[in-house]
Length: 396
Image (cartoon, rainbow, N blue to C red; front, side, top):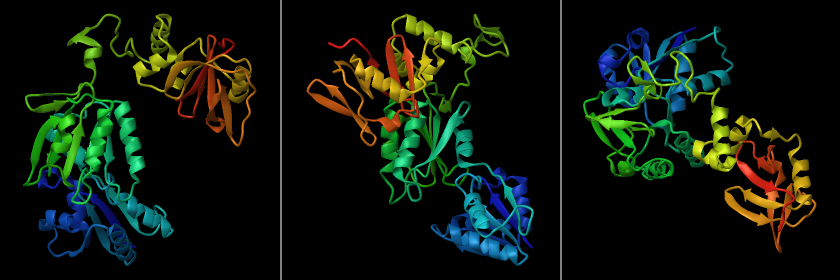
């Protein structure tokens, strides 16, 4: 049996290729890859069988690599960057498993890591990835746009530094505009952005800009876009994301009051519930606290010691409605409306809540949890987002 090398050769310039990647390509008898990849490493391919495949022929590459390895050959399936990051390692393993392949039996497989695009781009513009970050591909050729939009929304809300892969092509021109629109719902228009094209290649181009100007930049398939978080900044042409030392130290070696070296911040996990309780005592509602913390209400109620989990959310809803009361909020509605006293009447699986002469419908199947804090009861969906809140027994 032969061997398949899954090789990531980095951004393209020879100095950025790992020694193991170079060795794997040298050892292979056959090299398979996208025509552009073959061209980048052409100087290493003399005397080898070279198979070029175009875009959309990724699965063909996997089939060929496996067939040649079954015949006893050594094959290098190559990708730029890291082959395990938006590269060919995933499709190759999927195909192998479909053929009944098992690790340690038959064809040998080795994944050879490389410098991925986001790391290469980051090294050219400063230190944008020093704190938490995520990467999102804007290509909707294989991933539904709704999934991509949901990931952008989550990353924006969570204040991640975001690296965008596949941001734009000749046919896909609107995705980068939509991505910027989603991010701008949560981030300042002046959020720093770095646009890096062809990192470490002859046509390298770097532009530092802002989120509000992102869609105006020259962007293509060879571009990686790095979008800072709320603390990122550009200085002297370099994009930097602070690690958080300013939260703990007033100067090198000088701790801020209340902080201890090697220990969690005074605003860390253990002290977080106490801080939330202070906000509650100061008159903020749990919903207001959740908005300020940029977290689902469920996380706030879970952390607040006075809040009590309700064992049976549906029974608690029926009890609250039978007593009347006031609807405090439903979803994003944040008003106070008298409720007419009534029994809960679920109907496959919706129920109607009477409000004056009208009613609103609630999908009771979404009721995942409930909490009581003081007189108010909160019902939440599985993600901890508020479905409705009622102050019972005070209608009118």
